[in-house]
Length: 295
Image 1 (cartoon, rainbow, N blue to C red):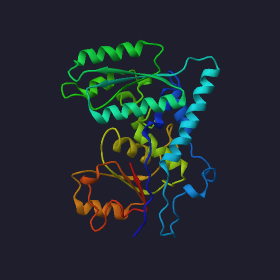
Image 2: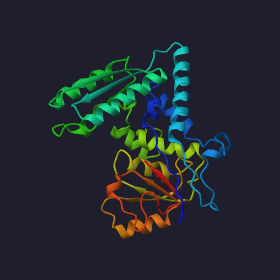
Image 3: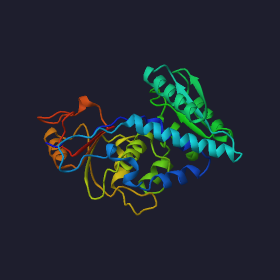
Image 4: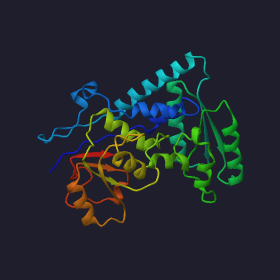
């Protein structure tokens, strides 16, 4: 049975999206999208060879620290040219414990790389109109580089409407319909954080995706879908992709079919809750694919 390569990654590594106004983040994405030399990362972080039965553990924490250092250098360089310090505004609605933890981590990451930030708290009964007015004001504020509305929002608020109200160039999460559309058309855009993290790990560890069979478990519009788009699109396009053959599975994929798909896969990327998955005789800790990325 094939062994697994597992990772965990701090999704705030996409903080670089707010480094520059306008199209500058797109230029940074284009530069990052080019594969780095395999030797640059050392043998310890390389996936196992086809002849090996041992798993290689990729340290997401170590990679995250590398990315944060690079972003910090970018921020310092940006400011050294006389530009204003990048600023992130986060709107946090309600008292969801998980949301507060996520926002706290994002603010901590921003501070670590030299990005100033603020958290705008609103009660769970805030009206959609008030939330939209806030995003419009932040869009017009020249001191604000990036805007983030922490999801999920209360049921009485339409998340899609709020995400589309954020200016595309300030849309740190990459959830605006324009950024999603550009992603689907293989054009440079701001990429949702988790998908960008998976793509970055694949490149930095030298995992080969060209011509490989990839199974993505999970079809969410914020994780599974963008990961699939990055992996299957043409490596020669404006926003280079992974040239892989991608199969998307989800909660309604028959268990027998899920087992078959993973047995045929070279790479398995899991973007779903463990309780929703079943791997036949194996488990999530002993999958069938050659490489397992736990997202």
